[in-house]
Image (cartoon, rainbow, N blue to C red; front, side, top):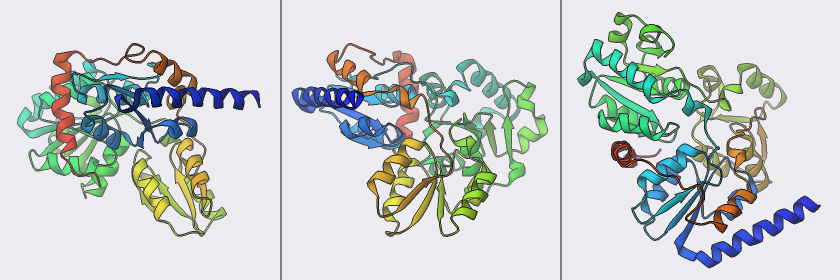
Length: 351
């Protein structure tokens, strides 16, 4: 009870700060945040939707991003010169993002383009990456994507050049290639620990999509065995999963899509439906509370500990030190290239 009482007091103080700052403040909350954070946010969504919000709100002086660091960094890239972006915990990182650093990506890009020529390959970088890699992508004619618009980004790229180098999530890239009908033997994996990513020059020339060997620890926990078990337990259920899952899990699902897609999928399901979801547990728990006339179940409990680092206490501390604590900045030379890639993304459709 004491903990609940303390949290209520913290929430009340957060609301007081919001009322005091008014339109000068917006709090952006990712779908994977705990309910107490989402409830005090001004906007909730996936990384694409929140990026759009950050880019379009010209009135806010302070943008507090309740998500992981690469998301706040992207907001800082898109924000105006008069805006300050803060994150309640700068240590809220992303394992997938850390799987591709600038040195590795530059080396891989040089290796590939030395074989194929620069005019044949378009880099596409997933939002789950740092600003330096986004800048590399922008400077080389590429685009950022999210799970909401990856297939549009791939189509955009194929209209311009014959190959795509996609990083850092192998599984989103493969599932997007499958969706677009790219042959499996035209998709190769690039392992940065191996010469030429573990491929031959012939395989690189033949490929249409080069997939960086990276993955999400939350979504790759789901397995075919989990799918079979849930099908047996709930034969009437519909199963929807995130496209960061492995392709065999995606193939067994009834539907696949981004976090925003999953939210809409549950919303549009008829009352009495049983829906099993393969994504981060905080979103699933919140949907179960919101839609009590539907049975909402996790495929397996899988939580992102980095998202969970954003707590009401840390959010309140940020608001106490508005404009000063945990400010997210990006060097101007990096910002310019990254903004090119993000601006291209914002012109893409999102579904």
